[in-house]
Length: 572
Ligand code: GLC
Image 1 (tube, rainbow, N blue to C red):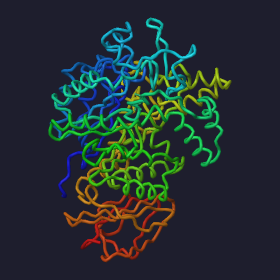
Image 2 (image 1 turned 135 degrees about the vertical axis):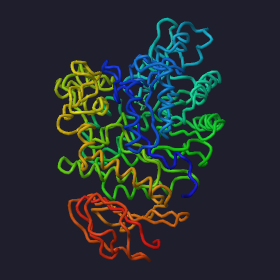
Image 3 (image 1 turned 45 degrees about the vertical axis):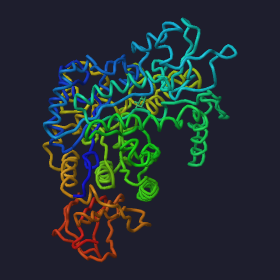
Image 4 (image 1 turned 60 degrees about the horizontal axis):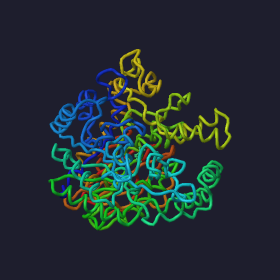
């Protein structure tokens, strides 16, 4: 195969530690559980893990409020447990990357506790402190999570800045000591052998130094109102622009790219490590070699229906915009977004569509990221009562809906379920057993378990069923690994106007392999004719039973919802 780095060939799998596996039976996931499940992950066929934050944290934002960058959350285990996990993963050929939250710390981090203690504390300038203006905050900025971005602190009579919750004060990255402390933490984990980092919220790291007021015309609440009422794509597009104007001085400041170059240099002190950014912005690839190795293709996810036309337009735009040498990275779900099965299903053909969506991830050019639980078709769980919410975004939305928008509680709850993120974070369903086999019977899990574990949405039942979604994942992951063109190949779109299906070639010159991929996203059968130099394809994979193992490319029969991969005989 063309010489590629491990992270270009790998399929990543995101572990959300609180919900992945509960090894000590206390209702919360932990490293004991993760260690026990390494064999499962190896058999599944993934190559690398992204671990959402595993650091000590008051959990105001489910671990994205870090209170110590060089330790392990005691609920999850000890540093020794972490090392056992890392070794166990590496022994199985699985790499591990960690989540690195650079923008902010927890307000319980000793750095912030010191910083807020007095105006002349040596760590004062590690965060962003400003005097108020006209009896209020320093400017009109909002927090991305809602409300003002400034919190008044009576001890020192100043405000501090927080892009996210006030429990997550922003670090001042213009202070070289902050960089030093954070790069030390980075080296701590690299020295232990971790393979890289997923960088949280990179776009928010710097703010406009002059703290200029934003000039959006709507208030944040008016914007929420308008978003609720938006009935057309045009309305929505206009409101998204308005939101951009609201945050223009708080995100994507040019200095972030210098910082990423610095971090890249730190990473490059170690062989074979990588960075992936929580950003859809191509600018973070730098010149293709000097910033992040990967940035997520988030634009692909920004739709409610993954139609062939949508995917083609996305690929056309994304692939042509990447700088030379940059490698794409695709995903459809993570701990901040609805579950793939729920979001992109149509309510009737969900299982077939889930298979197509996996196939899409594994056959498009680039590194795929999967999210734990999607392999068994876990669905969003709507919570029945606000007391069950653990994501404070949901809680905030609920109270704001009632207090500021005047909505009745039932509607506020629906709103909280829609915008809150708990729905995709429920415990992994390991078996048809109490608590879905996540925790022992009678234990209260940190979020409710989705009761559909009893209807076949669980690992144990699906392992036993050759036709299950889980076994489909396992098969397709193997096929990808054995098919160089699917990993290294170029992407060439075919039948550009097809409404029902996606057809493209993946062609790897170095290996002389070309594959034809057809993903029929419709319930209609098609007989397709491809005008290629070669006339026949050898079957590599199909989601359906096909007769024979060769196909005539001038009359290729594709069943409704079929995933078809054929190797073109003699190249295209
Ligand atoms: C990122 C995380 C999200 C978190 C936020 C603040 O977007 O993915 O879960 O709430 O950053 O850290």
